[in-house]
Image (cartoon, rainbow, N blue to C red; front, side):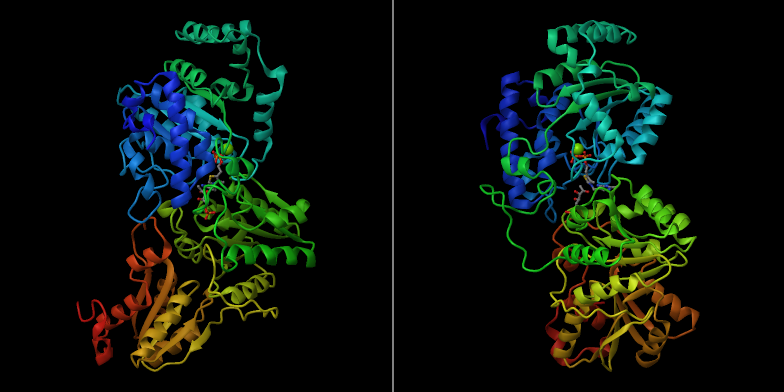
Amino acid sequence: MPDILKRVDSPQDLKKLSLAEMNDLAQDIRQLLISSVAQCGGHLAANLGVVELTIALHYVFNTPQDKIIWDVGHQSYVHKILTGRKDSMSTLRQYGGMSGFPKSEESAHDAFDTGHSSTSISAAVGMALARDIKDQDYSVVAVMGDGALTGGMAYEALNHAGNEGTDITVILNDNEMSISKNVGAMSSYLNRLRTDPSYSRTKEEIESVLSKIPGIGPNIAKAAGRFKDSVKHLMVPGVWFEELGFTYIGPVNGHDLEQLTIVLNNVRTMKGPVLVHVITQKGRGYQPALNDPDLFHGIGPFDINTGKQPKKPLPSYTEIFGDYILDKAQEDSAVVAITAAMTSGTGLKRFARAYPERFFDVGICEQHAVTMAAGMAKAGLKPVVCIYSTFLQRAYDQILHDVALQNLPVIFAIDRAGLVGEDGPTHHGVFDLAYLRNIPNFTILAPGDENEFLDMLETAFTIKGPVAIRYPRGIGEGAKIHNERQILKIGKAQLINEGQDLAVLAVGRALGIAREFVNVMAGMGIQVELVNARFIKPLDQEMIISLSQRFKRLITIEDNCLEGGFGSAVLEVLADHKMECEVVRLGIPDEFIEQGRVDILFDYLDLTPEAIAETVFNNWPDLIPSQAWGLRKIGES
Ligand SMILES: Cc1ncc(C[n+]2csc(CCOP(=O)(O)OP(=O)(O)O)c2C)c(N)n1
Ligand SMILES: CC(=O)[C@@H](O)[C@H](O)COP(=O)(O)O
Ligand SMILES: [Mg+2]
């Protein structure tokens, strides 16, 4: 580990460093970031961009007494390194290792848990109001990116904070990037603040503005004076923010530690809501990340020298979707694609290039995306809303009230459904079946393999109402893609394997696990009937009833939460028809699942073929054949 970094185990150590040493520290931290993310994967580009900003924040503020809230939290690695966790960087995002997001249970310096965007100002206002009610004394700082500022919640919070006049500091970290290039009118406004000289005030104007800040002005004015001519650029009128009741300070060079520490030192003593507009460069200090900040926003392990990643052996569900939607748009001019700031993540990059007039990146605005799609559907288009399962949670009422209630034909392509792996509990998409299947008019599907996914997409375009297709992160089952598409019969499950001893109903990614389970059982002489549910809504009631009559023992498998999920839906059918049948539901239990490789998580959840066999034998010991006695846990109650 480089020298200066060795000496920094806490923010207190940082405060002993000279400016030159802090600049050296910044370079040491960049090295650690690059080597750790190259090994573990993670959010590299954003962290490289906030190195100096994070050093300056910890130099000026005193965590954990002062609270720093990292919006989204993907850029919190530097904060973790400076707050006693540098040695844990080798475990970043691994099972049992350090989280890639702020986590209060991991450190007292992590003031608020994040992962989803645009929450930081609301949380900061809440903490600041609590502080004031309890008559306590500490600073509350929200660090938010320009991408996060496209999210509606940020505006709700700015609106409220400006009105309350609460003492909070918002650091707007503007790097002109969301994951892809940032979008929207606010982004253009920030760009004008950054670049248009007519927005810049003269030194005298700045000092006059500063001196009007009650009780604090002279301090700031003095600090500004130290910058002589360059101070002209220190404060420009961020009129929009000022109209909302914020004191706007900026643009500030986010890589100039001297300027940052002076500005933050003064901001620290200011009253009321303050917004500091900091300009940073995403990917700074690592050429491959500078060349492709989108790729290096969130990346798997890579070669440090080349920045290259190992080639994937198979196309992912996302890529298959990207190919399909491109073809579909060519075939049907009414097809439009909508993303909420996840163009590459949802496989829409080529669509965006080929059909710019039919592609809409609305920013981190899942709610707006869904209601806008409803409007488009009402007016005759065929909108496909491409949103990760976990982020679609944001738009629940819009799905229900604006789409489903009017039975509008909006197709929801729900990527990253089920366990996503290293991003962990903030990002696992394990709730969608439960939050969607109670909404009338919906058709909900989950593919068991790549061809079925394509059939489902094709089928979705024939349905005259809202459709959700949920599919997992990463590569599929490896099925060879053929060209004949079939329109699926709505609400009909698919019999995969006939058996006599036990029936399994599986859905989506769980079908792959179930297939292997059938083989494991067959190896022990137990014949399992396997059904691919295909539809979560409408359910194939006939099939479920028939299975319950024939087998009396049924297993459901899903990678969704058990409460309210697919297995619960099966139980409802059985109860409604007064069927007597023993059902074991397998899926995600009532807990937040940690980060880690998906196979490790499935193992932890006893959702491997062998573990399922053990569960079966534990529930129904009469099924245990003599050959099965080698298996872990068998016979234990
Ligand atoms: C509600 C929600 N939607 C989408 C995302 C995915 N996401 C994570 S970071 C990010 C871009 C954030 O951009 P910005 O705030 O400017 O941070 P930067 O990476 O540029 O530092 C997006 C879209 C998310 N975390 N939460
Ligand atoms: C921080 C965040 O929300 C995204 O960057 C997310 O981590 C992307 O996930 P994927 O890697 O699955 O696209
Ligand atoms: Mg940004």
